[in-house]
Amino acid sequence: MADVIAEAPATRVLAAARARGWRIATAESCTGGLVAAALTDIAGSSDVVDRGFVTYSNAAKTAMLGVDPALILVHGAVSEPVARAMAEGALARSDAQLAIAITGVAGPGASEAKPEGLVWFAVATAAGVAADRRDFGPLGRATVRLRSVEAALDLALGALHAPQD
Image (spheres, one colour):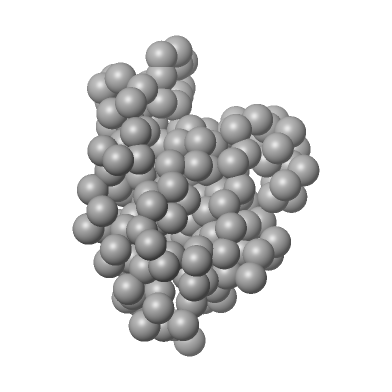
């Protein structure tokens, strides 16, 4: 699937990170590492990509990223608080200056409260954490995951171009 992902957004993210002297970490659930794959598909990306955490299970979110199990219990894995905690955890557990986190319902299967295509993103830097919700709709698993990768790269690029204190 990584070959389907447009290289241009990932190339722009890598260039912007290089310009800032920043490294990137990813914390991925529903995308299963596709953002890290999109970045590392590009030769020479090792100077920017620090690491990727694939935290598909709730236990992995807690063990690898330090997400408080109470957040997951109260809000569910697909929620703004959990996305924020994932991004913060990835930033704290890496040598990166930017972490992007993704948690969502790629489908099939969903609930009324958390429909197929609902994805939460969070970007963490030293300046703080920003979250973003996208409702892609029931487009099918592959399409939701692909759109999530595109959105994550776009959010990362926005954070790389934002002024930092």
